[in-house]
Image (cartoon, rainbow, N blue to C red):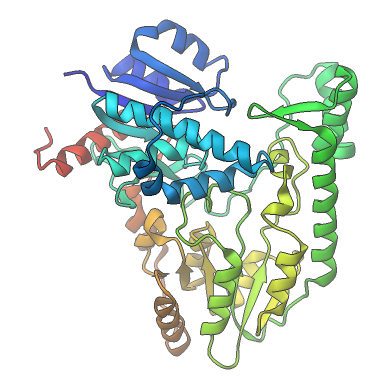
Length: 464
């Protein structure tokens, strides 16, 4: 019997492995069309039924499988998808229409085909072509898997149960997460070519960032109409958003303070927004709410120190400029003002390093950021607000929050007991069975055997 799958792979490495080394039939492929994916799609036409362009949100026009019962069941997915679409547009009617078109399309796929699994070769990005098939897979009890992790070190998340599964130990590539936990977040990549055009572009980026480069492109094309993921926008609307972003940056620098590290405090590490680490992944994604919850749970004599992600205020580079679309919808000056109004809470200057805050804190609070790994070196407990989807949940210094009562209990335990002395090797050994390195030659074969083994265990079958 033919095994049908839905595959989401923007880069094409997993697509290449599946087409060359398996007999899976790809009912729907979501990818970006570039030099790696185009030849594969052309060479294996008979193995791919539908091919969706990740960069074209308007590609799907489909309404024959609209169903009110399904719409009601998928409402949480709709909320996340429409939130994500605000990264691209401030057009509510169009955002809703895009959601319903994709819902109808994928509803037909799930009713027409017997699917073996849904697989995403990165973290879920909450786009309609990412999140809707996962929501439907859960509703129809089709195994769905996605990656979690940092850079090339990833875990496999079984989306249906929101649990990380172990990699098949046979020929499992080791992860490099221990060595790379203090990783540098890149916002800009220099072009490899050394042509005059490349050098000029690099100079323009240094002078005015992506907003200047895009302005020059508009002048050259004699049009300020642009497109992002297939949605038309005007350059000046993005420029306005950039100006608002700079105002937000100035406000933060003016009002953020340098803290006293002699105080007893919990360090709340803000996440980048709008980002896939939150939209579509976290059940409670409102950071302001989590700050208020944490501050309320603090005992007398404790403070909550909140620091912005260092790159939240640096979105003018070639890897992050897409964040500039409607950025103030997600974070704005009012957001910081509300934080400053929370009792016993301070908004911290970006000048103080995260390492310094970690080392002097009594604990760290985060969704599931890499600060969890950094805290191991300092024997600091970590409060996780999004533990189920993270391989960090297996670390012994983490507290998992599912309700306000859990947060109260965690803070009470942290403040009334000495910190646990952590053995780095033991801690990383806890997550190693769940982590692997995507750059290893055996990664994709091990990934697929791990998923096959898990599917057979779900069916009560013995893995051979």
